[in-house]
Image 1 (cartoon, rainbow, N blue to C red):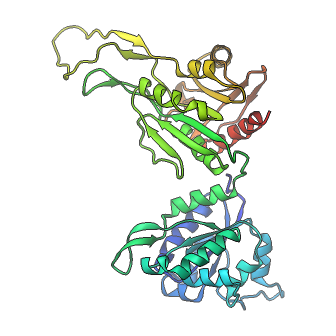
Image 2 (image 1 turned 180 degrees about the vertical axis):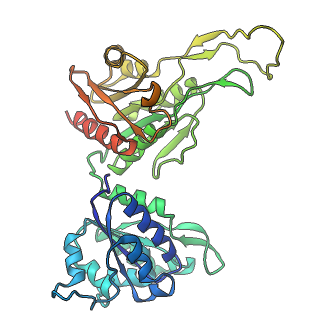
Image 3 (image 1 turned 30 degrees about the horizontal axis):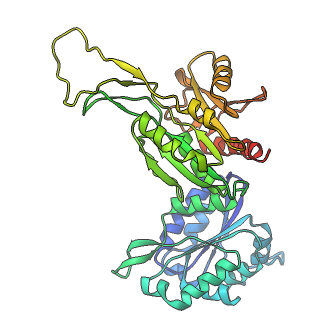
Length: 400
């Protein structure tokens, strides 16, 4: 979901986790959002309004009577203009007010007036969070349409350990993107493969490739944002698994093939992004190979199974299969040939030669090749944005 240009209202309540709200604000502004902050009275004991004002470039609302000289009522005007609202941290006090319809300060009054998507991030002592009254309030708010981000578990400010920690700002940003994304894949099961594969030469060395996994992970996250139930089959990467995505870790092409084939019958959409090794060592050494002084080291290689081709052959009626092609030359010709040979519905081809390479980069340039012969070139863009652009097309294919 594109945050750039969105108007976000950040509600901040008086808890120690308010310091994390500063970083969340910074993340939102960095992504191009216009963020307005509404503070409850006790926030000033933890973070001052000038901090939020300096980072947002917007006035901060601290009172119902912060109205402008032109007579406009700030909390009502902001409610009309907001694309989304996130309250982080959300204390037990604000949860009780919102569940009971109480409006006695700027934030609670604003929350009753706003109709855009609303997210609450509870943060408090474990005993408070587990109190039946708080849990009843959370149930009520969820039924009322609020998105609730469950707190994490760990060391708390009171010195105890348990549930109640506000999630890190990056996770809250991720959940906000999910809340704002279209839900055109709701009810769909999506399988994504990502990353490289590794084929052992000996216990120390292996054959692999330069794939970072970023494109596949972006697609898995984007599919989850859009309501899908997602399984990510991933080769070795340094990336954190996407939130709410079942991640299956594999190393070799054979392991990836088994993970895909065992799940594909129960899947609606298969997106094979992984850069699977074409060859493996026929007989890997069981001990580290030492230098022998000879001119070279002969390795007998055998072909791995072509996972995408096998998926295309096994595809059931109604399933949508998307393949990827990384090309150093003759991109269009090679992509068309792969599209025909693998029997996929959509092939995403991207250049990987020289400065154009997508390996390890945060951006990618793609040309889409459809089985009906049409082609579509997309400009270079951030991989997260490209993931949504691809899924825009896939969602349409899935309803045909």
